[in-house]
Length: 292
Ligand SMILES: [Zn+2]
Image (cartoon, rainbow, N blue to C red; front, side, top):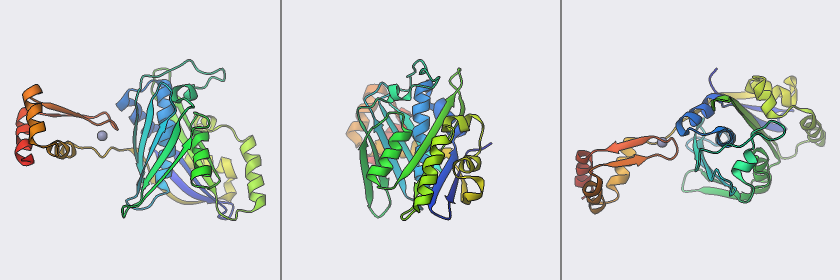
């Protein structure tokens, strides 16, 4: 089954909701970065929230999420856009701990709790929106919930989950975000508060193999959900050898000459997807000519 995202309304338009399956997306990230189990869960939860936040944008808009809680994983960086494309990395992918007493991966310990979650949205026309909140949990789902409530001032619930196999591969990943629209009826709010108390944790729903539509049905009740749109999502980087070539040319001929003299070649590395691009001496000579 391919990864996809569902946009929906619930309770006669009182609630805007997103649910997503990200198993393949997180698997791709895990393979590229060779993340260990707890790091996979932290990065996977962030990618899952990120791809849903991207789906809230329009057209060519995009956003970047940076999380740094002072934990051993370092910084988590996620980029996403309105087309279901997401990419991301963590500073230190080789982080894993014993599971917590509840048998869960100890994401809080990997991420840390002393730091910030920051979001920058590039919404075109040189217009930027940025918001930043202190981490309140380190488990990330709650931190995104707090971000929406505080920075965007929209009552929101975020659930993200990643299940990892003993061999480090990804068993399943996904999540949901729902938001109360302005003027949501009291009766709907109290109904949702009740439901959130009784619903199984998102990791359980994912473990059961629920589709995004089934997650929404579990949250709101099947007859309360109106699906607006479904879209494929995937791990997708924007890097290319040409882009790096332009960046190298931009360094100027003196700098390129130094590369040629010192190493006789150059290797460019994309943090987001861990791809490496090798530039030979001949290619560097050509870039030097272009650079002037
Ligand atoms: Zn890349």
